[in-house]
Image (cartoon, rainbow, N blue to C red; front, side):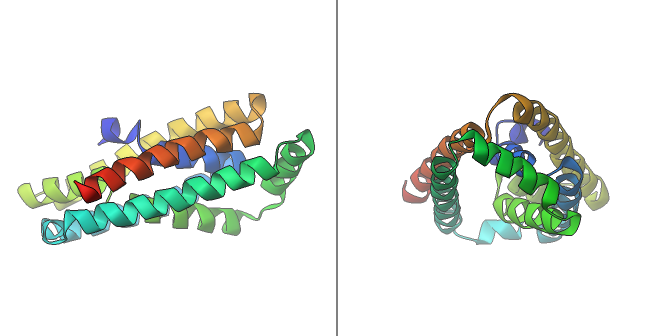
Length: 185
């Protein structure tokens, strides 16, 4: 699962969250989101196979398409150094609970139906070790999140926020197109 998540949307989204908020609330929100996702994946077992794959892929395509548009729109309105200063002020001024809740919500929703969740469901259905599967899924997701937060901190110091947002918008757009392809074909 760790290898699945490295080039995945979780990494891109965590990079965006790291550019907007301090690392600790992002990490706290991610931990709760991923723990809940792991529990759900283990509980569902093989039930995800009952859902039509095209519907899941279509919903994911729409979510990523909307995310790409919103990121691009925000990056275009924030091109100046003043906006980077404002983003820095927002990062410092956003309360821990608010940043953690935003991180939780966005990461929880984007992981829904993700390859790692489907993998965890399949592994949980195959092996009679729900605790080991859930713990492994959680640790894989958190490892990728920590790496993305560390990279995000370095990027934030060197790259203006609007460039990070544009890069994430391109990645989100690519994920939207890939999901749309899976929904159609």
